[in-house]
Image (cartoon, rainbow, N blue to C red; front, side, top):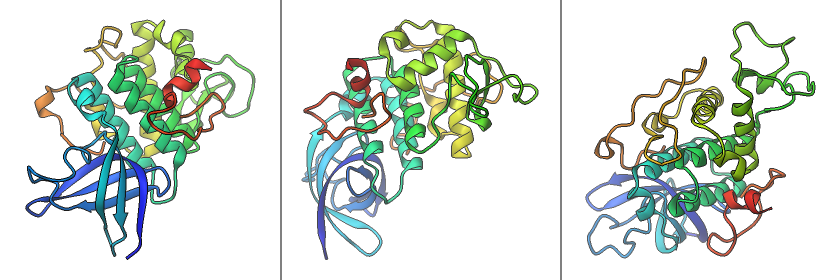
Length: 300
């Protein structure tokens, strides 16, 4: 059977038999891969922790009829320990990998791969608030999928903004003349934050206040829920209070998915499935030698 080699991010795993796991991975060149890692659950497994969620690895697989088989795995980005050791980072990362799982398929998706690697690296390094990092990732991931929201000009008519009425169904802010009855209005500060998160302007994002962050999180959740047809299961567990700059509460937003209080770390699912520049185009890079997807906009 033919073999191939690729860089991957581990999205989730499932037990198979007594010692194996099915590993779902997002790859640089082969899209989403589902493969069996034989013996990975044994203490003396040659894979170690390299095939755990949030890890970035160089894998060699051979193609099977329904599932591929992992033959080798070498670590590229060992982000798992730094993410799992912090509950706010862990819950944000879980929502990220669930989103990647939902948005990708077996077709090559380099932009999705680079964005996820950059986001997980940023989380592991603690560069920004986990909640802000998550919201930025979600907006960019949806943009790559073809659902880029408009936060300035009217999403329907193209009329120059600013506009404050926001409709997930219509693709972002809309002019008063076309806004459906009951369309919620957003604060100017919230719209500025959303634009900063989409563009990667981290100076502006970090200067935002709790009210803007809370309202922005509701907007992002509503936008994700609409375009994915059902909400992310893991987003209800996201901890928005553990980081000094994180949002302590989420204001009500009409149309946003309802979020339950974050559970204790022990109650969250352990393997639940859950770089884009200013131009919106991913830049080819290796995970460890270049700035992260989240850093590229900030350093430009």
